[in-house]
Image 1 (cartoon, chains in turn brown, purple):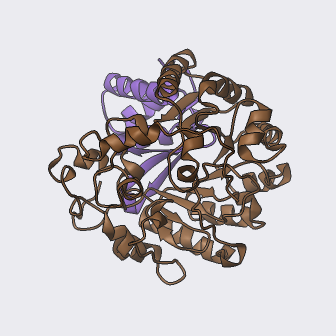
Image 2: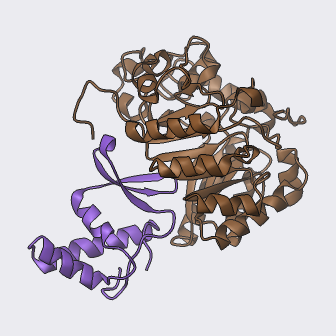
Length: 360
Length: 90
């Protein structure tokens, strides 16, 4: 795919965190614990420039996310700018804050796809997890409008101890709402989710039942709906190829313009991030210290350094390695070859039915 | 298996696009990117909802001066695969 071997690979996807503002308080939010404020947010014109630079760099898809992207009044203009840059536009929303009128404008602006998060298959529990009364009913209403406008819809169901036994009813809900795709996404423990890990962690038995349910439902609904599943890696033997490899396939722009290799990268204190206000996206991708830090395999230690799978999983997740071992260059301890692997099983056993520490 | 008289088209949310930096044609779908080689791109470009599979095969056989039978096998296999992945509709 890349004819010039010394050049960095080209990214495919850009996660545009348009704002960190969000009415919901999901305890597993992927935003950092230190949320960026409204006054620091990039303006419409800067986002438009970022999208043009992204397309020239090779980016094909932009995920308009947040926080809740609907909190930005200029969301239709931002969407149009991404579309005009030639990017495939995907709106990632909680549905709270996107009115039917706004959705109409987004559709006209060229929106290609909508992803709505759901917290559970039943209103009471869903609103409790979101920390927002009425969220569930708004999601169902927006989903209906997305389908009416013939925009393809994905439902993103984030799974954890309180709802992991509802895989079947989540998929049934996705079918009922007219989604063409559903993500059964087990919580990944970074940021807010790490803070709430004891409240969110499922048991091994729950995870095994959920994996079996997904297999069964895929067979049952083949041709009706695509079911994608993200496995909870605390119960895995091999680590995930996090973001498809550091600085290899995707990048993330924060509301204030910092460019990160993944949404959790700021949790690694040694990294220095460049900002789109000061550098072009191509310069940041090719040369910024944060992207150079773990690109390729040179940074690896044993057992990754001599591992035949190093180009499949890239040593797993750098943020997780740092969070669990204190060393961002360590093998992701999810890997059974990691000398710290036993720690992961120990942490998965720590469960407490306390109130969530909501993202605020 | 897709029928010869079906009229395939890309559903909303699926787009064929050319990106220099990525080195050619790509088929874009929700959360998915598929590299399309030159032949795949020629097939997908003809999925307009107007031409039937049979007409697409005729057109490709003529344009590339290739045996119709082989083209038909390739086109049918590819479009059936795209239908299964919801990257095409009839």
